[in-house]
Image 1 (cartoon, rainbow, N blue to C red):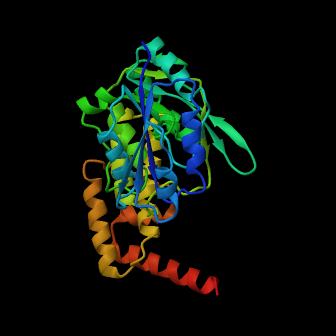
Image 2: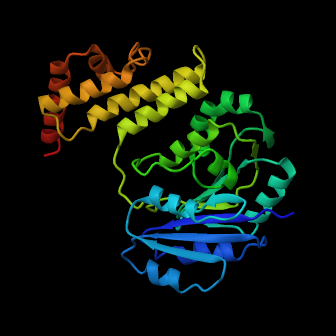
Image 3: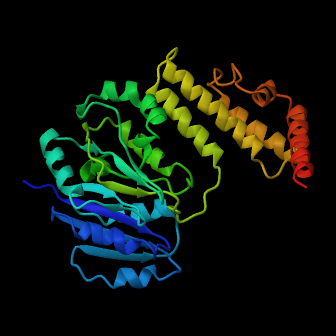
Length: 326
């Protein structure tokens, strides 16, 4: 029996690309699908383009701008088919995108199928795939290899694209995107899914074309280091074991996020630096190994705990950049 798919497309000011995206889906060789397009308050001609389609498989939902995560959640709430897949409005897919997924889902009996994608720029294109063995993968193997996959394959496991997840699995585990995240919201969503240990299979396909250099979010991204710190702490605790290379790799990542939070502060008044230091110290509770070592000179200052020294360093750094760029 053929698998049916709900394809969710958030759209925000994508008049240049959205026709190619939709047309590539309508051209699929596998016909059991619905397209749920959420127009997230576009201010260009995207709305008119979307409303020009009359295909019965397309459902267009217009809403006020709430961000890509909110738009995807609206798509999930309106989905009705067996499996969910997400496509960004500036991307497109080969005509065999769904037929390959259908064959592999039926073959492996999986709740989650992870495929590769093809990154496309003005100058070249290249396939990016997981290096896990093709086929069904056990929960332990997936967990043990997760960190290596994230750092050696351009973070493919965290991309929202080129994955197919059973709708009932999402519903049973109450999985949704966090609308408060503006950075790595895709990774946060998949981490929540992976923690529930779905029956997972790896595909060799790369029929999804990911356009590089285009804005994919309805909001302009901000560093959001606090949410990043919490997310990678969760990865440390869930997908690594102490004294392993993966554990150390994530510790380095966490120290880098901690450092970047202070280096990118706009407000470096002493009172604000003191407030941020207290907030980060709270996040370090129970994770003393993060601050147990330092990878850079500034990290040594940060983990030393003296707010005055931290503030003085940031002030000197700001003055240096101010005068050196005159």
